[in-house]
Amino acid sequence: MKRNRAFLKWAGGKYGLVEPIKACLPEGRKLIEPFVGAGSVFLNTDYDRYLLNDINPDLITLYQFVKRRPKTFITDAQRFFTPRNNQQDAYYALRKSFNESNDPYYRSLLFLYLNRHGYNGLCRYNSRGIFNVPFGDYRKPYFPEAEIEVFAEKAKRAKFVCSSFEQVFRRARKGDVIYCDPPYAPLVQASNFTSYATGGFSLDEQSELARHALRAACKRQIPVLISNHDTPLTRALYEQAKISSLKVARNISQKGDARKPVAELLALFSHEHQRNVIPIKRDIKKVGT
Image (cartoon, rainbow, N blue to C red; front, side, top):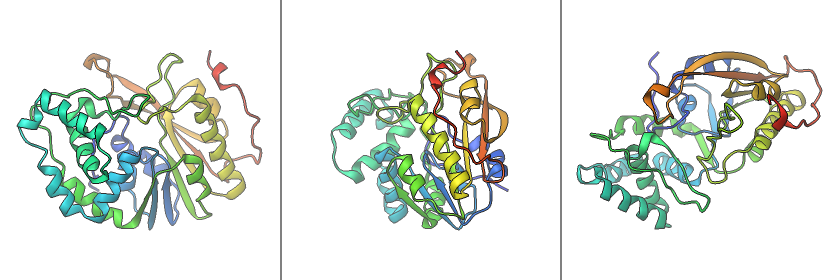
């Protein structure tokens, strides 16, 4: 079956892992994604309904506009994809305009422009919430018209929300399935590429996510699948899950020769696999050190 590509470029996107993720996902009436990102899993699964969340309001607002009026959005967004706007000075002027604007629709149009013209598809904000990805300098950035149309059609089954993952877990009911693709846990303690949204995603939050997953599976019989780097830290966090390990080509290094396969894991928390014990909180900063 042909896989559907997301219309956004996304560091850590799951397009290449769709098949193993689908193989691990249980059946259910609704798929809930607390960290939807570019939406590759959403686009390539077939649940009746979807609840798709992200803490990045620019991303969720974009998705809501694409769902409501895809043709208008495509027409308006395409106007930014010109040879003139694919120059460094134009990019930085439009990036400045994005950061200064309070208009949700204009920001959504520019979010797509910045995503396709910025460096390596990164989505990064500084501590003041300023989008600061540098110019990508691509020969001819691709305008994803067909991909937007596919997304908009599938989005008829989806509800998009912008809240914390804890709040999204509380909305789940028996019969739902939760898939979590959080910002990656660091491969080593000093490496922490987790700042795609202002504030990043701390080690304590990684631990809290694992506790929510275990609680959902044990107490509420709601299966939860989590993807992350395969490290001693994540192995410890997901020790009561069924773990599958795989190699993935990671593409966020600035040096081409450093883009080597990275070990990832899929951790399935389900009622069938769990002991009905919620583990005591551990000091995860000491794990693997």
